[in-house]
Length: 540
Image 1 (cartoon, rainbow, N blue to C red):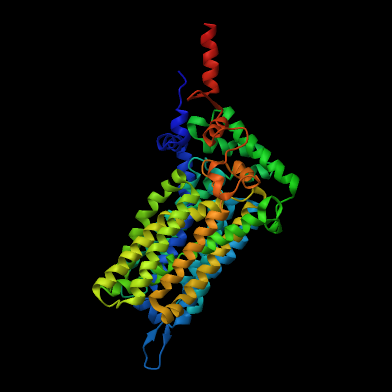
Image 2: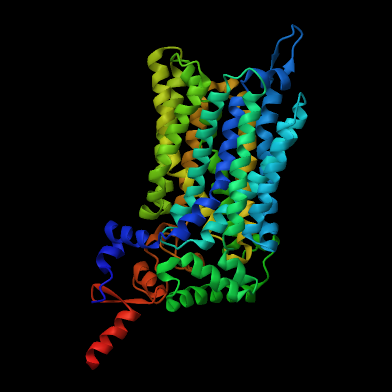
């Protein structure tokens, strides 16, 4: 009686880890993770929309530039401004998300982000012929998207059990890809209309997604770590009990252990200094180190070259006779969505470092082939064009399952609680600033060097791999509080961090059991309840 799981299987084997992950997935965990990740859906929906709008006849007639011969088309500058203004707004949103969420909470911060999205979408739908109005609307929607990119990973990281934290945070990236694909499909359907329904209907549908997110966050609990940092102990207990689900919410030992671990970490950090934006640049406890690392990781997520394919990959498909750009986008979108699903498992099964390193090497290889094919051969030939398509799809498959979701996971979990919102916002600004730069300048660069841009992105992927290897510590199976201890352990180096275990424990699995009020005897894990039952049996 009392057998829970085998230490050997759970300590290092896939079967034991799967059982731990399965046990951690409760209905509240799913509801919180999926609802918050709708913030990613908003980003994906907006990204997917604009790439289709730019070729819709009614949109072109209303907002593009008129030439002397009476024809209309989007020039390079206006295209870059319309497409890239979302990134500028997102940069602002990412930067303000830290102070807002530290003041009023992660949950209310996301609700405010939904209000920005409603306002920006309304401004766009009401535009008649002013491209400036469309640009302003996209910028305001960008503020919402930027706030979500800073808040969702932090909120989910602070509420999820460590066994599934990586997968749940990565769901944010999954929802980005689903949002893009659904927008591609909606654009295809609306493209057959002859009026402004072509672009106004897709914009109007996004009200649904923003409304679902706002309503969901209104009903869900606040981050227990934020609540305790504000001294709201009773609310913290209620939040922890809700997250624990029906099976564990009455396990006082489990809830108390979580509460105490969070409390100890917050107390220690409060003894250092109150969290402010400037504290994100403090060298103490490696805060500056992690803030800069987060910025670089987000920056190199953009420099992998993914958005080159999402925004400008249609050229490769045209070379093999697929002239319908909507179909092109749907093909890339399907690959993006399908391949994100295994990434949710990879992150918690193999760890953050392995996923990022091997993913970066995979992306490097296919970009190298892409640049060689497009730069050295005639892309108008069908065989060459087919090769470019294969390279694009294989690259996206790798990105969707590695660098796409994993960077958001690392960004949401590696900062200390007192500056987590600020540092995550600064790190995310690296994503949005480079998103804008690449969106705006890629057409000009490709006009000069063409498909050889693949070489540039390949080199960036190798730099990204090096950054991960030498600077990122492995956080798999650790609580956020244990992760904080690891980053400040002078004996722990990033390249050896997979072997690091919390003080006082032999393995990370043993530390996990201790948090649940369980212990290991031989090869068997027992709970405190089992110990009590054993003593009662002895009395009998």
